[in-house]
Image 1: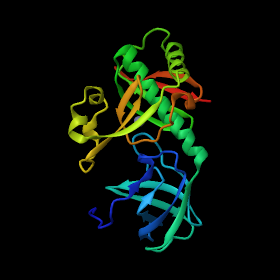
Image 2: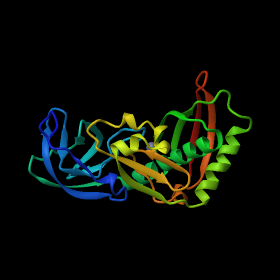
Image 3: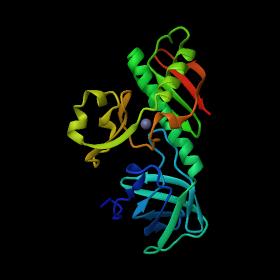
Length: 240
Ligand SMILES: [Zn+2]
């Protein structure tokens, strides 16, 4: 139970990112905020640099999705269902799949830069088919944008499988490959850490949605590199 007294929402996308709809039971509503909490959801809540999904719950449109503790709140435009009601929900799959491709592209970028330069990521953000990520470079190596673009597309071409698994919190905290992704930022109530492994390239503790193989990402272009101050360089990518 949460402070709110509402049971935790089962986040179905953690196990299956390809699920685009489900029937759920309404556990609570917040009529002032036009929000609804369900027993289980396919909607990704904004976090980890990935924006929330959009779609529908019943006849209403979902315009925002946020996590509060372990409860996922969906903000609706349209009729608010009643607690106890069964509702059918579905996400805008085209947008979600674009976000999955984009999120995986960022992990490929992280993996390439870590493996080739030993440089860690400091932050990032994405929208469908476009993203930016900041790295501790000072300065950027010569010809960096075109080298990285080529390396990322090579990894995409290798069709590396992407495997999601769950690991004991204590085991994750001492796993060398995971230390740089700051498993200590995973909230306390999470007993099992979710691991996203681009096999042979990059392993991270991550709560986001990803495609099944790197070849599903498509083509990545490095649009721009920028300096955001000493030891912080920004790389912008676009997918097609
Ligand atoms: Zn991620």
